[in-house]
Length: 170
Length: 336
Image (spheres, chains in turn red, cyan):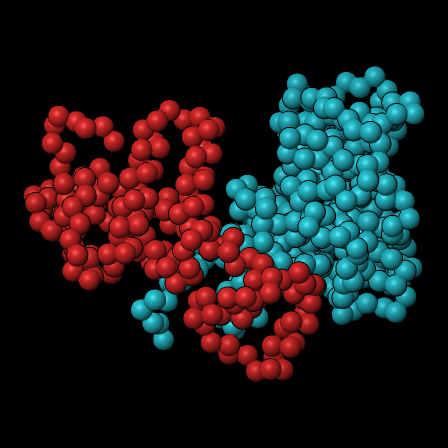
C-alpha cells in the first residue's frame, strides 16, 4: 500500500470479544454489510461499528485477506498475478482447522464479503469431497437420524459412491 | 434446533452445489434432511447448470456398457482404474434383458433404454439408480412398426420437458415426460436415419444416410431443420454425431486417423474448424473427466477435451452397446 500524503479515513470496528480494530475505509467497504450501513447512514462514519457476531481472531484474518486482495487488484492483471492470488488463497485456507473455517464462513457471511465467502465455500467443498459420511457429520455437527436398517438401505442404493473414500484420520 | 455455529441453509447449498455427483450420492447418508435436499429438483437442476457452465469438475463422463450379464459403467477419471463397475438395473428388468436392450440416447445424465420383447421404454439415471418405466406406446402405434426404430432422448427448455423421439423413417412418435404420454406426429421433411440421434442444445442430431447432410430435430417445434456442414472433400465417409459441447464431423483419411471438424458456433457454417487429430486408438487410461463425448458407436469412442485435444478409444468387444453419459442427479420423475 502506498504511503499517501492525504490521511486515509479509518473506520473503527468492535468485535464480539470487545477488541477494537481500526481499518482503512477501503477495506471496510469490502464488507458489504458495512458499506450498506454507511450508504444509508452517511453521518455515522465516526462511530464505532459493533460486530457482535465476529471474533477478533476472525476479523483480523478477514482484514488480512481483504488487504491482500485489494493489493492484488491494484496491480495489472496477468496470469502470474492470478497464480499469486491462487497461492495466497490456498495458504490462507490450508493451515486452518475445520472449526476455524466454519467460523470464517459465518463471519464472511455476516459481513457479506462475497469473494471471500465463495472462496471459503469452495475450500470446504474441496476438503470434504472425498471424506466419509461420519467426517461430514462431525464437520457440520449433525446427528445421524437414520436407523441402522435405513442407513444400510441407503448405502446399498449407491454402493459405488462409497469406494475410494479417504480414511478418517482427524 | 439451530445452534450458534450451525451453517445456515443457503451456505450449505453453496457448499454442496460445488461437490461432485459421487460425493453427493454418498452424503445422502449423512441425514434425512440432507437426503431430501440433495434429491430436491431445485438443487439437482442447479447442480446440472453449474456442471454445464461454471464447474465441469463436479460431474464426470461415464460410459455405460450393456453386457450379456447386465449393465456396467466405466469411469473416465484418471484416479480410478478403468475397471467396469456393476450397476443395478432398474426394477422392471426381464431376465434376458441383454438380448433385447437398445440404448436410445442420453441427456442430462438420463439414459433412455428399450428393454424386453415387446419393448418397454425406461428412463434411467445410472448415477442415482432412479428409473421410470414409460407407459407403452402400443395405443399410439402398432408394436411391429417400431421394432426396428431408432430414436433419441432430449430436453426441451421451452417447456422444461424431457422428450423421447422414435422413428422408423415413415412413422414418428414422441413421448413427453411432463404429459406422461405418447403421440404420433406427421413429418414431411427430414433425414433417413439408421442410428440414434444425439442430443445437444434443445435438439437431436443425425446425419442423413447417403449424402451426409446434418439434420437437427428441434424439440420445441418438433420439426427437422438443416444444419450447415463443413465442406469436406470426401463427404461419403462423413460420420457425424453431436456431443455435449461441440459438433464433430470426421472422415477417415486413408489408413490413418480421422480428421475432425468442430462447429464452434451452432448453426454457423463458417465456424466449422478443423482440429488436429491424434494417432488412432490411444491407450485407455489417459482420459480426463474434462473430456466430453464427441462420437460413439460400437467400434470406438471419441472424446474431445476443452483444449480441443482428441482421444479415441477402441471400444470393440467391450460391450454389446455403449453410450456415454454425464453424471447428474436429475430424476426421471418430473416434479414441479
